[in-house]
Length: 206
Image 1 (tube, rainbow, N blue to C red):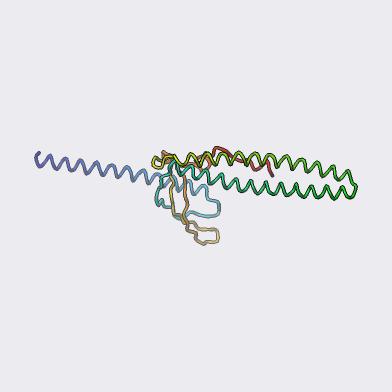
Image 2: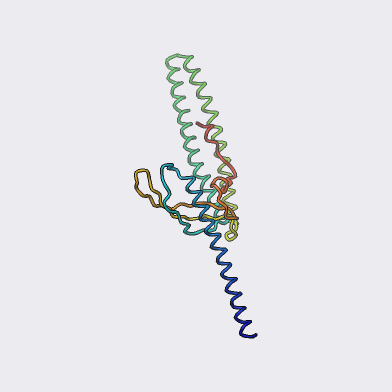
């Protein structure tokens, strides 16, 4: 190989590597711009002004990690539902005491009214218990699936970003935020990413 050909080959390799790096850098810059726009739009404090925003790193999320997060979310919901269940049963116990009191006072009308309230609360308690049993079964299944879940292949990503905002009182707040991305590194909201296999409708228990 002649000296000229060697030089041309080296230049070609250098240009190719440079082109690849340039492409990666452009993709990273575009992602950072998208993340910054997304964060700015979703700022909880509408009076705050975004001073700076920087993408720090991107972490891979595997199937095992996703299952772990689903279990964590459902367990938190279970705890909340269990509190509602305990409160409902406490109301039932109070209602029984009230019926006994009204019975001692020979007030059939008040006993009947309290009995009607008790029946409604009792039905609600049964619904909550059934839902608790359902969620517990799902959590156990997810736990079982996580033992053989993939720990390498990405199912999504988490972007760690540092930001600085200027508040209405002119004070500065610096913190870190985490934004979820799908497999194509498009921004996705937490609910759509988690895809919980079951969701508790807490509204019907209010």
